[in-house]
Length: 60
Figure 1: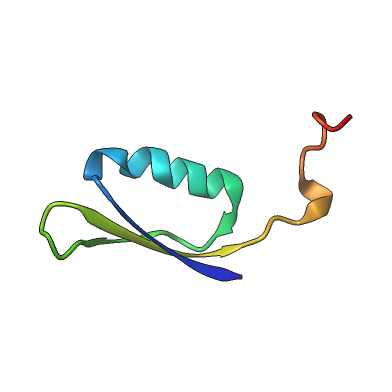
Figure 2: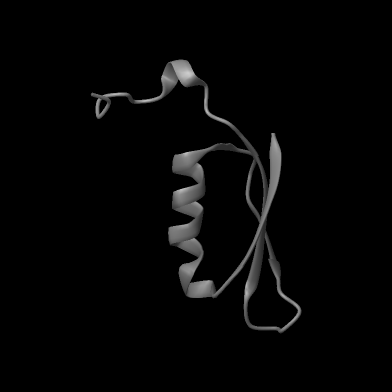
């Protein structure tokens, strides 16, 4: 398990959230305003995926 914090443009938030939830088993992603008043901060705890559930169809 590890913590992730991302500071991003609000327009990028949906793509980033999708990428995180695709790559990792995540706790709910918390959204908070960044200090600059424009960007957002995303926080979550992520877990490495279970190797037994990974898709190895591209392995040679």
